[in-house]
Structure formats: structure tokens, C-alpha cells
Image 1 (tube, rainbow, N blue to C red):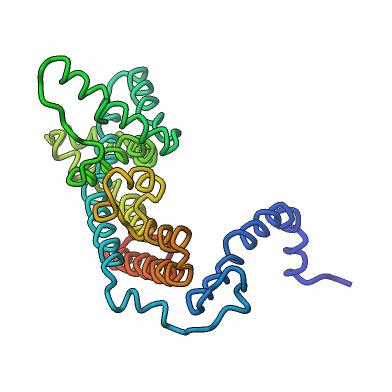
Image 2 (image 1 turned 180 degrees about the horizontal axis):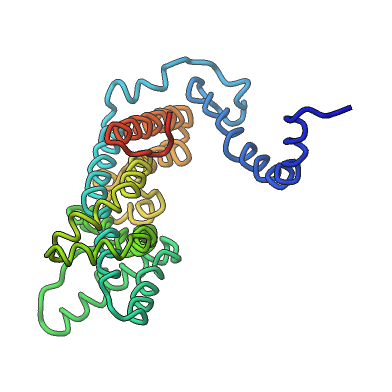
Length: 305
């Protein structure tokens, strides 16, 4: 008895499906199953009662968002400001680094520079924050140098007014080099004949950059921007929580630390879950909206409908 084409196709793919099965199980167990815990956003959750026995309160926990609780508004404002700064300042830097690296004539120097730029990515935020404190803290190298030479010191670590520039500089130092890899991969695929033809036509470096290099980077840049917008309301929990005691909540509270400080530390589990749930929904909507805009400009984005 002959088997159907679908059965033969399934049998042929069975080894691959079996190899993928453990990863799918882990994904379901640790990523999707915990999503059911979001139900505590609609309950007055008490750990000693459990999720099932906790009182159902409906939308009551979302009042902290609707009524504009001061701490929540502060966290939301700081989150949006930090996100805007990172998109405008941090996002273009890997593109500039990739273009600069491709212009280096010596492959040996290029590899050395790449290694130096990539290295900080593999350091944890604890180490990165510690390094910055050793250089810029009150007893750091910079202030010790200024004291020894009779100059006034600068309060950088612990200065609330400089907190966002400090976060931005730390993020650039840690991750800009790693993000450069993606843009370098795209630049390596550009046909060299395009540059040679442009030289024959009299185009200089600026015109080559504008008409050849940047258009080649457009697709990957839009894709990464969509992913960044999806993560817009998450601006580095570990990086911020490590430095929060030095500057205070007013300057450093963001949505992720708000959820931690009110949920884990303060015991307001349900309100923190409500804020986290809304944050997740908004992030999904941002991704879908940005992907739709990418389609309007003729780009594939994350997926094609």
C-alpha cells in the first residue's frame, strides 16, 4: 500500500524534527508556559495563597497606569528619554564604525581594531560598571589625577544630571563594537565593481557613501531598528539597578526597575505584573507597527504578510 506524499515528507523530515524537539520543549517550558503567570495582573496576588486562591480583582491593578501614579510616570518618562537618546545616539555608531573599518587598507590593523571593539561585549554589566567607577568615580583615576595636579574634581558617578550620558557612554563602549559585525557582513557583500564604476564616473568618497554604501545598509538597519523599537521599553535593567542607589529613583527609575522595586522588593506583585503586561503588549504593537512602516517603504522587515 503506497503512502501519501505528506507521510513520505514527514518520514523524511523526522530526524530533523526529533533534533528540534528538545529545543521546542525548552522554549515552551521556559518562555511560553510562564506567560500564564500574567493572570496575577488581574488578581490580588498573595504568594502564600498561590495564584489559584488569590482574589480576582479585574482591572484594579491597572489603575496605577490609568491614574498616573507619580513613581510610574517617572519610570515611564525616564524610559522614553533613555530610549530616544539610545536610538538617536547609540544606534548610528555601529554603522559609522563599520564604514570606518572597511576603509582601513591594512587587514592586520583592521582585525586588531575589530578585536578591541568586540571585547567589551563579553564583559558583564557588573564588570563594566566597576570599570567606569574606577575611572570616573569620586576616588577614580580621573579625580585622583585632578587632585594630584591641583585641579577641581568632577562628580560623574552619582551625579543625577549626568546619569543618562553615563548610561549612553557605557552602552556604546560595551555593545557598539559587537553590533558592527552585522553591518560589516553586509558591507563585505557589496560588489567592488560598483565602487570602481563610480570612480570612473567621477564620484568621490562622499557620493559613493551616499549612493552605494548607505543604500546597501538600509535593509539591515531597518530590521535592527524594528527590533530595537520592540525592546524600546526595556533599557538595561542590570546596568541601571547597579547604579540606582548612587543617583536615586527620581533620576534612574525605569519600567523594569519599577517592576522590580514594587514587585520583588515592595511586594506589590499584582501591580508590578500589570505594568509588565502592558509593557509587553505595547512592545508587540511597536514591532508590528514598525514592520508595517517598513513594508510601506518596500522593505521586508521581520516578515512579509
